[in-house]
Length: 294
Image (cartoon, rainbow, N blue to C red; front, side, top):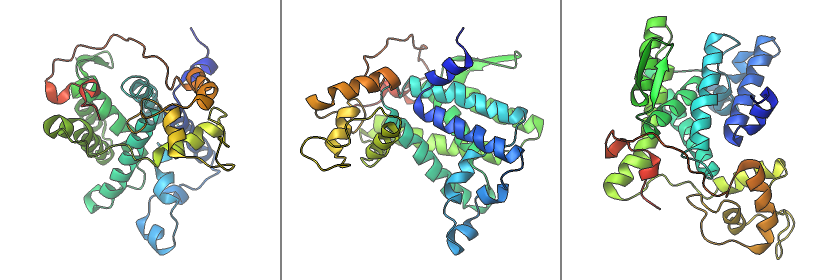
């Protein structure tokens, strides 16, 4: 059995960063070091006083330390990590784009009065659960040791549990809507029409390049023929050879740094054959492995 430190270091980058920030925010809020009103999503303050940080900070509050907080954190550790290590393996930038798209969708939905919510972190986590349930629809899930059901029905089962326990339903509903919107645009619509309307934008790759560079796992900041600090799209494509927007060319001078990425994040590593659950739910819900190639 691995130690907690080994488990933490084995986590993929996006889920690790998001989970860590959620724990950090819960810690400072539980200790009374931070006023929650500073983090809350208040559109009036965003537009009238230009407090734009509220559009971001509200996603990192899952509640103070409690059983519900622990459950949400476990959702990230199980379903989010399984997504990032499974369907999104070696496609970390695509996973980051899914999170960004989900956050933007939730911000729009939250502007609707009936969906008004001051913190959207729970909804973002529930979106991960929904997408996971569509990627692995026939996985068997045991709920509290009482009921075993297919993963396809997991979001609705958790929604029903929230009704029983008296928890708010709006956060879960927002997560289901955002998750289905993403899944529809990236899987169902391409399967029906052959057109992918939600490809990962090119600007996501330089952003993720910066993230890895901070971790000291990026390519040289001064590639041959470019000025210091200059990051070109072709360099990004070299680092993420199998991502949706990054399959074109590989340059020799990034080989050593790509090996570092492979060793740390397994980006560009040879695919690992994992036993996948049998997918017999139908073509609409066969998961990302059946996605049309870009």
